[in-house]
Length: 225
Image (tube, rainbow, N blue to C red; front, side, top):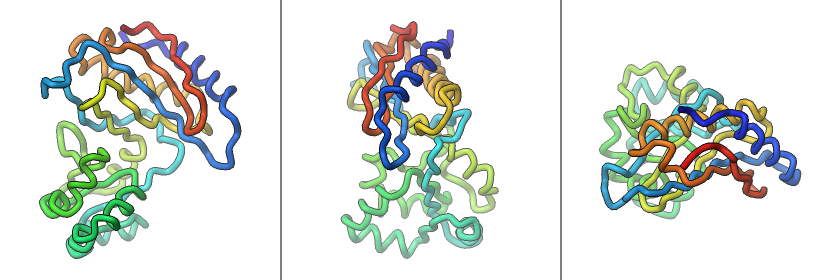
């Protein structure tokens, strides 16, 4: 049974009320504390993309790793494109690679350049949860003839869910400028995914909470656990 929207909306409203105004648009983040899950068992770990019903409010910075026609089409859309030569240069300069990866929210890669990407930027992308994922975990590894428009639209609504070393999931769900309803529906989508993919569903969730970039943590008083 899905987590009810009402307590999520209430928590988001309280968060907005208690968060001080800043000179930038703050993101809204969800924190999910997990219980009774043994992460030593690989089957219990999660590293996947979840596509939400609403965009995340602040435009996601997307980098496309591609060559040939795919790269040209990505550039024509105004996207940052990394080709094979540029991957090689970044791969030989770890400091520059870390800075570049930090500047982007999402990496999408042509299937032909995935081996090169894994070799050059894999050590940086992996730990940050930005390595492109293919089916069934994601849609970020694409064929040369892929239509980029729906893929880019999809990734404006994407969050990466990771449960690997710690029993806490933290992810962005939007920005403070979004309506409480839209933020709550994004949060509900994540809890729906966890309900379906955790061994005991919502019983594996100890607590849920939201916070802004520099704001307080507000617990969501939902029926979980």
